[in-house]
Length: 345
Ligand SMILES: *[C@@H]1O[C@H](CO)[C@@H](O)[C@H](O)[C@H]1NC(C)=O
Ligand SMILES: *[C@@H]1O[C@H](CO)[C@@H](O)[C@H](O)[C@H]1NC(C)=O
Ligand SMILES: *[C@@H]1O[C@H](CO)[C@@H](O)[C@H](O)[C@H]1NC(C)=O
Image (cartoon, rainbow, N blue to C red; front, side, top):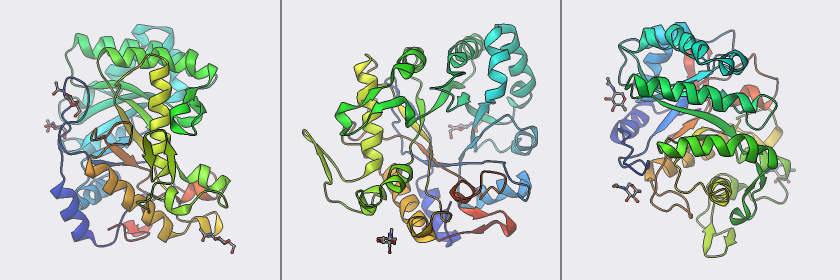
């Protein structure tokens, strides 16, 4: 989901082109940046080489892929200025959780061949599998991968991507609290991450709560389009729903004794079609534009003021093999001709 004035966008992103230096507390110290998710569930997508040219032309230096796709990883060879987050496929978790040897084999096959010339910064173990039936497989795989990169002294962070369904309560943010399943599956993961101040990756979509109750939730609150305080939560005032959800997660972590763990937003976005007047290119552009501003401002959230974090927009392309409706319309670009769906900047 991004733009039309290619030059302006390029200028803007180049200007904030950032190096993510985590200081010892794990918070980003340099300017924060926006990356793009690169989903591949389409039968009409451009070649990886063309997609990398697109990223280059718009100044994108962080991408996330959902599995260790060899075509994409091969195309990335030599593009070391692009930092890559690579996912372990959910369906591989059971086998990997069963033995540390299996994890080594996975690493040797899927990651090692690219270490010399691809900038792999994160490996994410599972995508939104916590909370859920295979949630317990995440921790052992993370532990094995963490041991492996540590023993080889590789600059790769090991984490997982979680959904906000881990929250039993999120409103107002200070009441944020995990579900009992999240307490079993997620909290041990958070404690492992805390040992190295490695960020937990979270997917935050204000679109979904908004779409479920559009008559009671302000659109400008859902799209970062007002400066007014809409939700007052004790001393903290919220003018956008994104921050409120983010902080609910922070509060929930604190209640489990997990303090100061950094978060990276691995996905956010707004569909440009599929649900009537709630999903127009205009609204999607507004949300995404404001999200980018929010991230690059580095101003953090009311509970973590001035603690910037990175964020990834979902997604680069509309993907025609996802479920019909809004799911197919989160892209910034039409695959055909790589045409932007709306002007992001
Ligand atoms: C790291 O950054 C955080 C957030 O800006 C700051 O509070 C902390 O003092 C910094 N730590 C060091 C060691 O610089
Ligand atoms: C990988 O990306 C990081 C962050 O952008 C950067 O600091 C580092 O220099 C890159 N690595 C290489 C080999 O270019
Ligand atoms: C969508 O249309 C309904 C019915 O006309 C209207 O009440 C609502 O405000 C519209 N919502 C948006 C976001 O335009």
